[in-house]
Image 1 (cartoon, rainbow, N blue to C red):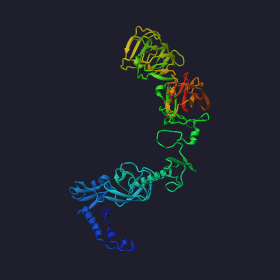
Image 2 (cartoon, helix red, strand yellow):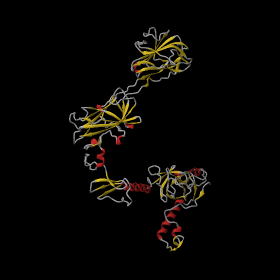
Image 3 (tube, rainbow, N blue to C red):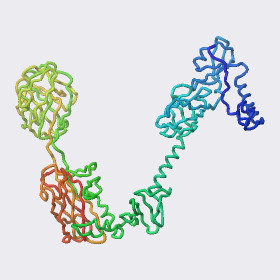
Image 4 (tube, rainbow, N blue to C red):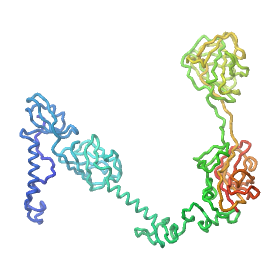
Length: 619
């Protein structure tokens, strides 16, 4: 037989005989005193021994590493027992069926050891553990593994008894986090295929340590509530710069600037208003208009004016929340760069008839004029210039003239056809075998949705690219002779559904820049009526423009019904950007109102970006 007789008693939860019958209370330590045998330990050890003998059975048994080795050995009598110990789910206790030399084996029970003790050998790494155990690891037994080092990365593997590495997974199937396996801890799990699945989702010690670290950091930043200013943080450590606390006596937050406690610039009473009293003196003095202190801003909407300029230089358009979209036009929002720009499109070249490869070849066209007609539904884009992509057939072709124009009835033009040129102004098109060539761009107003005809006179070669798409949107007309430029087509033969020569049509669309008219959402001053307004901001010019001619600012105190023009002045050039401000605009002549709106407009199709504006108001 290829197996071997069982020589080791499996790990047990009961005490061993050496422990039960030890000479000393602590085995190997005579100074601990003589040990008295405890009947409870004898009973536990004896019960385990009896269960083991029962499991082995009177017929003895053999041990095999794999089931394949067991199945290859039939030299056992009927009802003989054998163990398979290292074949994952196939491990277990088997019984022989049939006489020696014949029959088969049947699995009848799990191995009798349900818990296996394993130790980290210390020969691996923190993230690749090498462990050993007295019993072979199987998927039917629970494993208690003591680790010697804390893992530093993820994933982590463990190999038992020099076996294949198993990836350690949490109970929910995730990889353990770095630091989750703590040195000296015991991992409880079992083999699950190529993984070692833990009984828990994560090492609680790592979670607790992380939470304690976060809480400690929070405590050093927010100190809590005090009636008088604290002199240390809750841990007794020196107060860190930037730490703050809530003063229960003054009902306000204070922060530590590194030398002394300072009040926050804005009071923290949550009553949805901002008043003079709530603004620190330093902040009130910084809100000014031409050197004069700005009258108090009394509305949270005013302080939260959607377009701000921190320190006078910040971009301000992160969204349309501060724009009166119904009163604005001609702009496109660029929130990623905090700005708005002119609407419309630059010059662009687009497909009017998308590329359709002419996969086959058609011959015999020498001496004929071809007129390829495209239905209006196939002309998807209009433009003021046009070019076409042509393709030759298996032996190529030469065309003495090629025309493009809108289609009338049948194969006729409407009369606006123009000649196409190739290679920088040549009227003749010569295509080698299977060659593709674009025509030059020519000025011609293509109308989207209107049928188009390409007419070409083939003078030599006679093979061109072709497909038959079985689609009535495409019609080929042809006849002998040179007739490409003629408006009215007569004497032509019709070949429905063919597409020849023309693989693609492109048009060029002109610049469609729009003038910007941008109106800010009104912001309200509820405790006084504004009489003076001043605007400053930043724009970036793409075209040369003149302030107050190509770009203008207007102000309103009645929500955008009445406007008064402001005069813009350049304060400073900031690279490609311009920092501007306006004069102090009197709005006392406008109807009484307290809702301030700003209007920014461009003229003469001049392109520019508006990056941010700030508004200052006086009563």
